[in-house]
Length: 351
Ligand code: SF4
Image 1 (cartoon, rainbow, N blue to C red):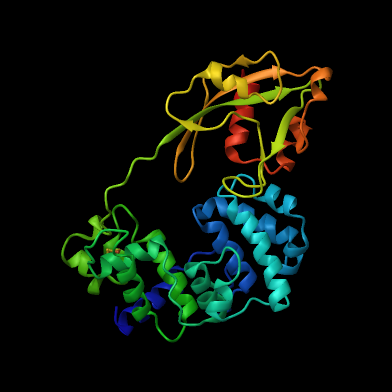
Image 2 (image 1 turned 90 degrees about the vertical axis):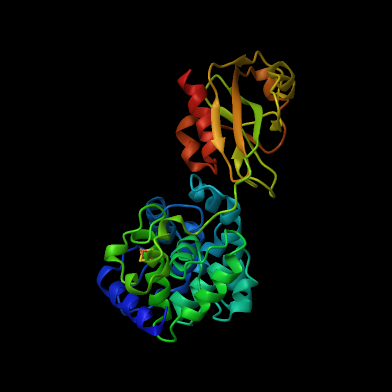
């Protein structure tokens, strides 16, 4: 893209920019806190889903200082349902680091941003460009697609990534870098879409090599995917006479770290032997295996769970380990409960 194309893209952005809760009005810069928060939320999550969460977060924690001062459990609870929970822990750790290392002001410098928890090259570049107008190149999946098509880069992903990074950086204009970054994001999300790009209304159409060669829709090419494995286990929904269910805290690190969970057997690949998995129940009880089950997909594997239910008696409560709690169904929304755990409880309640 020559500067002419950057100019065209910016002119298009001036007319078609999307309104987002985190975006400042045209001509103004967005606060770094809002850029950072929205970019962390938008990783792996759709814009529509993020809208409500973003509103809720900034209402409750209007500044990075307020977020840093919040208990981690509150942040995890507010995040529940957005998935990829390491992001919420990093968000909290990142807020603390901004306060402790930078007095509550996000740094403009790339190295200092990259040293903050949860900030990678994309987020650092997005903050530098959008909040500070530095000519930084923020390349996410949308931008990758636009660049691969615009320049007709034929090498499949992920090998083509370094070339895309390089070429994308060359195209960033020295002025209005923040608007340019957001224009690229908007173009990728609304015009140069994964399927059926709307080339006829695209401001970059005249210079788009992918379109000229008639291969735009095939780009970026991808190396064949490896199949995700499936892990299986039994989830144990234990209720008491008051209708509360037993939850326990997951270890602080790793998948769903620090979140609440319904106890379950280990999640293993291969065939599930239910009778064996039932031996891993959190307490001895009259476990009844429910019909159907719960399926959930994580980044690296599918999970299939059989759900077992039992009602606890008082004598068994004494055997519960620390870190567990009885939670009534109406209080579940206040807990840091991942989507998969909500599915398990919903399944048990429906039976
Ligand atoms: Fe994408 Fe088509 Fe625009 Fe090229 S002309 S950037 S393929 S929408």
